[in-house]
Structure formats: C-alpha cells, structure tokens
Length: 582
Ligand code: SF4
Image 1 (cartoon, rainbow, N blue to C red):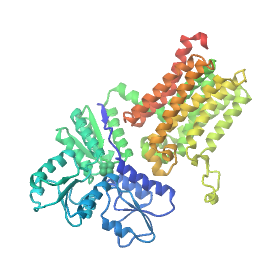
Image 2: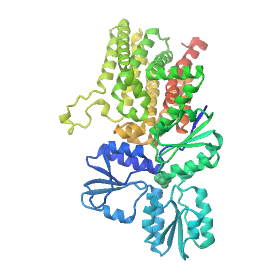
Image 3: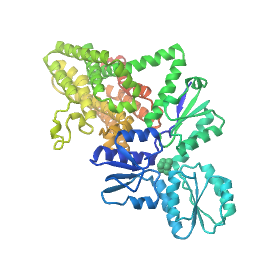
Image 4: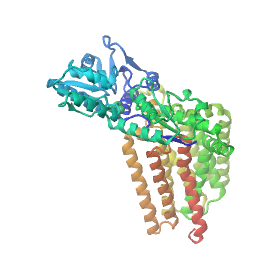
C-alpha cells in the first residue's frame, strides 16, 4: 500500500511568510503580538500561535497596545485605517499575491470601474478585496450569479487567489458573453494552480485521496472537490485523529495532499498514521523491518553504527586500518551523547516528531541507563588506549554535557544574550561536528604511534567535520517550522532556506575539489577519490529531500544517516580491492 505525498503539500509562500513574520516577532520582540482575525485558516496553526501568546483581535474598537499583524488574506482599507492608532505597530502580512489583487481593484475602482470578484461570498480574502471596490463590487461563484448581475458598463474582473483556474476561465467566458469589454485579470495564484494540478494528477493515479486541512479553508475544500471530480474516494481530515483505519486499509495506493495553510507537522502526523496503519495491516517481514529500523533510529544505535563506520573510513583515509577499540569508542560515545541531548531538546520535536517524543517518554529510564552505560564503556575503552585518548574523550563528553547547561544566571539574561552554548545560533551544528571529529579522527590518530600531523590527517578531519555538519544542517532544514515555533535559532532560520542550501552545495563542491586535489598532489591515497561516492550520495538525498520524496522522519533519518554507513562500506571495499594503497 504505497503512500504518495504531494510535493505541493504544506504552507504556500503567502502563509509561510505570514507565519514567519509573526513567529519571528514572538521570538525576538518584547511586546504583545496580535493578529486581525485568525492569521491563517487552520485550527492547529492558530492554536499553536495561541500557545505562543499570539492573540486574535476580534473587536477593532478597543485596540490593545502592541504589534498587530494583518493576516495573509488581507483586510479592507477601512480596517487598515482603523488600525492606525498610537501604541499600535501595524505589520502587513498580507500575501503579496492578495495585495496585488487588492491594488488592481483599487486602481480600476478609482477610474470608475465596477469590480467582479470570482470567489466565495463571505470569505475573508473576498471581503478584503471587496473593500477596495468603493461600493461597486460584485462576488460571483456560479453562472446564475453572473446571470443575476445588473447591466454594467466598465468592468474589471479578478479572482479570489485560491479559486481553481478551470472555474475562473469558465466563469470569465460567461462574464464576457454578458459584458464583452470586461477587463480580465487572472489573479489565481500560481501556488494554488500547482497544488490543484498536482492534486488532480495524483487523484487519478491512486485508489484513495486524503486531503489534510481546515474544514473552513477555501483552498482545502477546493482540493477535495478536485480529487472527488476524478471519482477517487476522497477523505478530508483536519488531523491524524480523524483517520479511519478500516477505511484506509481498504486501499492499496493512497495519495495525500494538504491545503495551503496546513502546518507541516499536521501533514507528517497524517503520513505517519497512515504508515502505522499500513504496518499493522502489512506482512510479517514488512512489520519486522520497519519496527527494527524505528528501534535502531529511536535509540540512536543506527547513528552510533554510522559513527563507527566513519571512524573506520577516516582511518583508511589517514593510511591505517583502525582497530576495534576506536570504532567502539565512537559507537558508544555518539549513542550516549545523542540520547542525553535528545532529552534536553524535546520541545521542537513535539511538533516535528511526536512519536519520537512518545518513545522517549515511555522508555526514559532504560534509555538514560543505556546512555550512561555507553558513556562509561567509551571512557573505559579510551582509558585502555592511554591517557591522551581518555583526556580527549573526557573533554568531548564534558563538552557534550555542558553544551545544553545554562551557565549564565537568569539575573544576567538582559546583559548576556546567550546563557548557554546551545543558545548561540548555529552552535549545535559546529559543536556536534567537532565532537564527531574528536572521536572519529583525533582519538584514533593520537592512539597511533605517529604523532606528526600530516595532510591526510587534516583531510580526514575536514571530511568528517563537513559531512557531519551537513547532516546536522539537513536535520535543521527538516525541523525548520518546529524550531521557528519554539524560537530556536538554527542556521537555516538565521540564513533562510535558500542561503542555507547554497552554503551546503558550496561546501559539498569544495569537499569534492579537496578530495580530488589531495589525491593529485599525493596528500592522500586513491581512497579520497572513493569518498566522492559519499558526496554524490549526499547530493542525491538532498535532491530527494527537495522534491519531498523523503519527508517522513524514519525514511529521512535512515537515508541521511546512511551516509556514514556508505562511507564505511566504500572504505572497506577500497581496502579490500586496493590493499597496496593502505
Ligand atoms: Fe498567497 Fe497563494 Fe498562499 Fe493565497 S494561496 S496566501 S495567494 S501564496
């Protein structure tokens, strides 16, 4: 029973922009935040904002002091005017596409044109648009509405941005029959168009469709209509709780799409639940495999294995075959640190990975025992290697534990912005990469008899640092919305998605060049060329992530953390096939 998640599912540009503006203000500004009506048409998103103390203004007569956001759907000019008051800072989060439709109506209304809006009567966006028509506006949603229009001379026609293109063109034809010289402006937004086209195509391919979104959201309802028009059974759900397992089990292939204002965590919860239903109704082999992967990932054993594989690979790159003790140190250290840190970093996961949070709550004690035991085992093995490895590991372990600790007292929080290392923007990615380099490169290097740092050691450290850093940023990108909600300042939040992606691509290209150059100038052996396979793999999974092929966390983590296992396998194959080089 494959599940196909539409690539366009999730916030559209306008909704994301409005959300980001409000959440950035919540996280950074020390003032009360309000929105004029619900910011977006989605109950879960509005509830999340309410939890972050963003209140909705229902009555404009009594405006409170603070920052007031105009929602993505926009408002009438009259409401804009009423917001202009002392003590009120107005922030316009109207979607640029909606704003453009408002300005078109404004321009024509000032020239004496009547305005026809193809849309839904009473929808907040339509109400806002009508406000610009200077009392000379009409809303039509059916052919009979057009038939009932009075005789109009100068007419401008626009669409509510979330109308379907088909309906817009059909109704425009009817309007032209009645008013041939009507000026037409197609203001259906491209994001709506793409979402609807994809929904139509997807609904034709699958046995059933699930549309995730608010019942009162116009664009969600439109997606349901489009999917139903293909004859495919279609279910509208607001959250995963509304999924009916008996119904879902009836279908082999299920398509999932979502309205423009549906938060990504709500969509992912639906995908997870459908997958869980699939697991429960699937064959024994399938159930066992997916449960095994979930267990390995939730306990960080999979990542620990990756750390051991990377240690092995870095050793081969440095010109020696690492002994088992180095691999075990990396395995136990990475398991323990990631488990400990997962308990101090759970807030964003409440949104992004609720099943993971549930697992941690349920197995809190065994996990903490395992993490403590792993830390001790890694220290014990390091001790057996000598005082230098144990000292390095102690520094790495204490660094990992102190990373989340708030070392600056609360009383000084006004003078010192960052009370812990963790609070420094982007610090997690850098600290984590350094810790990995310590166990995968530095400890094995210092445990060797040679103490002279050579170029191959530097290349190995840079290679390990870069791929761990990229892995960490990939997780930040995936958890962007959850992190923004809780006010966590990760690199993608500071730089933005576009610049972060450019940074990763730049880093990958530099790493490629470095690996090739280091072989050409004989800093390293042929093995560095073999590791170009890892870079290719990273480019590949970045493509899968960009196209939303690997959105769900189990698949995402299996594939992304698989880069370490792949690197270990490449190193092993290189060692076997090119024994003379190592
Ligand atoms: Fe803007 Fe289009 Fe989103 Fe509406 S659906 S908020 S017009 S991007």
